[in-house]
Length: 332
Length: 270
Image (cartoon, rainbow over all chains, first blue to last red; front, side):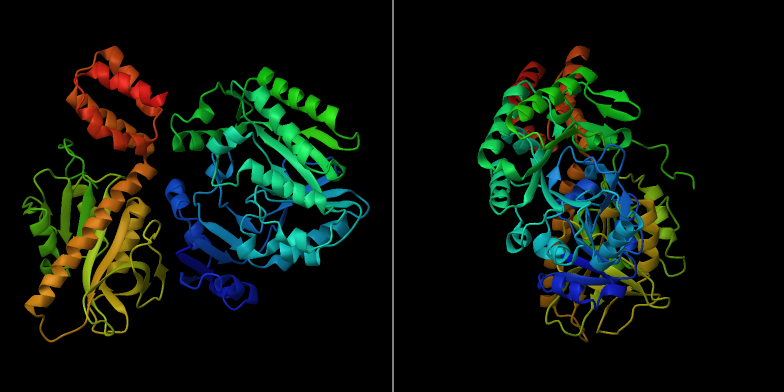
């Protein structure tokens, strides 16, 4: 239950705003001029707000679609990301969103049409080039779907083009928009996955792994393309057994004909975010292994990273078709 | 500004209250046994014997932006101090006194707005308030004297999540009956205590490392530890979730010696 909702005056009469507000009949609504009055304040307590987040409805005015960081992609010549929302309803301890914004409140931009317009402009400008657009960088792309209906809007309005791929990255079970629509060649629903015991410790408030696998199964059974994102790979004493079991379970459950891609990335943090998260969770198991700092990024020792990625890649290679893209990520 | 209290750092200021007049201060003075601190003469300043609770009464003759800064200095407040502004107000549609948290402050002349944090305040009723130089008898809105200036200064000075703007709104009557006075006192006691307890919980979340260090100080007072054991203890405590520590304190205090404390904590981590 969201107790207070801040709404920018400019969008207070938008039908989408009213539709979202109608889902929170008992919430207190406060009208504001700019979302930054609430979201960008200095010295907010992220952890405290995470306990009781508020919702802010706003209009985004620029930068609807941004270039994805180096190393973040599925092999297309260009990679972009877009975020209709900042922050996430989940509280995964390793997530870079833990330290990205000073606020943990949910900020939803309701002018979805502007996101699609900029995507379409980019497609036109890069005619003939392969492009991947990622949703779910500054938020989980489906977790708030019941409130935002963003994926539902997107599936009804996106531009179909053979060269273009759209990835919805998620841990959510809110896959209704996909179940209601015909599968598309252009769209991938990619799930972030951890072995069950690690997910229980670190994917706080996120759906259990077996439920995520159930959603993957449901999506492939209808012909939707899916992606498996083992990112981050988290090290512990049992990691080999845990990851082997996880990968085997998934591949046994899903229809692998619809497996588009698999990616791996070991646990890593930009320096500032590492410090922020470390202060939030003093003594947490997540930080109990040695981290090395290289180029302002904290990560496991090089040999651990390499071993984890090549071990998992080998398992996957043996079990899936050759046309499935398998790659490693280095987003920072 | 020079720290008025810079020579005395032997206490930790936990709570600062700001009110607009002596009748609003009375509840706090009685409840926390506050005594006037005569060495501070710009505003009437009160504190309890432990000096962990402080109160200042605003004065019409001085700019309202001064009082938060002055009290902050007198009380030697820090980022973990809870700030509670309290005032009485009137609302026409009430039958009995009602406590509100203010989540939107509107400056009556400029119409500018400020939004106090309402994180973790689900259980309280919230309302907006007009800020005026003088108390108004407009009964449609809650009107609080100079709250815009006071909050604006406080927001820059202290931790935003720990500022609470509160009011006890009353139906306007010619004369308050004894019965009304009793209700007022009990409402003040109930809600102010709730806010103080809640702010304590909030601090554990906001400052987990400080909480662990404070916990260390509490244990260190009760038991003897060698220098080596002190280090072991500090490192052990850092591995705990602050909330788990909180639930263990009473048990730990009953243990016989420092070694048993360390063993108990080690066991808990297994």
